[in-house]
Picture: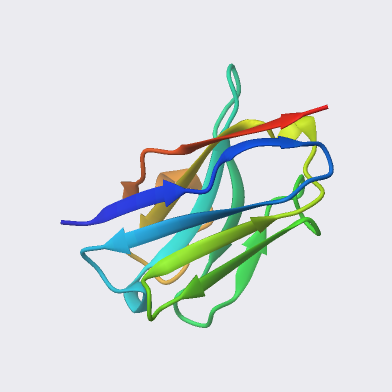
Length: 123
């Protein structure tokens, strides 16, 4: 059974940093693309970052480019999202997702989702 468990969310002041973790079980990273998405109240789910299993290439949403880094540790089956220079508009529930394909960019391409972790950035 594929499971994704996010952690690391919390309350942080604007300009601060957080590192989110996504612990995966039931599959190996080599065969999946892993993505981070976020959803704020009243807004659509937005892609934050993803990493390709085929070549490790990374992709970032325009709103976070330059401020976040996605990385995977295959020895721990864990994907991290390092977020720096956080802004109040980054406040959202952040979800980790896995796709049964080496590369996936849109949320509709993902097959498995975690329960989400809340990130709140105060001004």
